[in-house]
Image 1 (cartoon, rainbow, N blue to C red):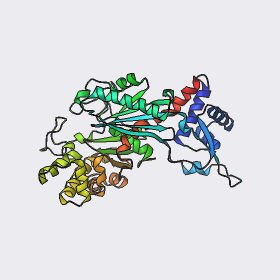
Image 2: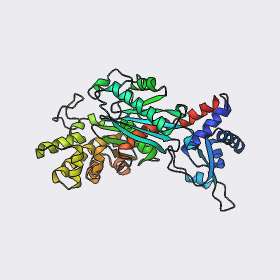
Image 3: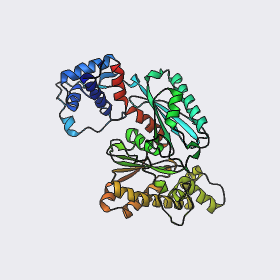
Image 4: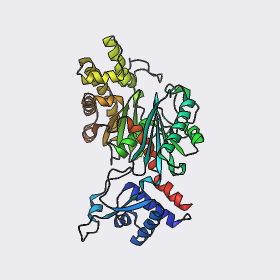
Length: 409
């Protein structure tokens, strides 16, 4: 495996299989990859000597990042065991490499460092004026990454890369943000290049709603789901799309901008310049503003959730109306994309059934019956960590190739 060729290619196939199916037997990996038992054993021995693969007695692990549901036929074809001893199973060594996720919110930067098994080594959050201070925010993120490496006593060469999320569409052709009206101070910047120049480590940039979708698929409520919509209801509204198991960006990275779909032709002017966007009536900020005007006292987003928890009638109505508006817009996506699951995350998701039930009812009312009946609506399970864990998962998904290249050197 010291040169590029069949051995490295086969090693990559084994590593990819163990990433997707952690805690697998040699026989199962042989069937899954189409490689002979002898070839798999030789490769596994070499990977183990390199500190990348370990074997232990146990059961398949469905909780690791990238873990995919096994088909019943695959499980049924495992060779019978003559004794009652647990099978000897293989997995990637968790500490062989690490990934960092960075979530740039409007007023914070969150960092998560994960090992190859998805274990969170470090999780921290620092306040930052991200919208108005891009250079200072990038400098702070650099300091957070370096501090995390020192704190965890991890050498930089064991870091596979950094996933980075921002609250704006990403033009994947240029690396710039489609940030007009959203993050105007970031206009013209290429954040991934800026971050990579500071760190000297590969950096991959993604819209934070897409990262929320990836986080929930890898670690949370959407594990094993190949077609899903992640709806993020925070300062703005955005949707992350995963279709056929892969993130969907669109031609210029604008796919999923449901917050700027027309919802009320006579509504308020949106920050994007259009009138009556969904974001102007259903974002947490918009709901808080509506209650503030009706009550005549300041109401924060946190205050909205407290009012809902206390059964305040106006707050219940405002959140339910927001849910209905969101559901009407989602019904169009449900018709077009036919997802298996809609995961609702962000600040307003904490309202629970007060929000989710009107969303589901509106989808049932406005989407075609077959699409509406096949989609499930659920709250995310990762809360405010969905995006930063998705950023780490973005890098972890590339770990098999990176580990194979490490062996080739």
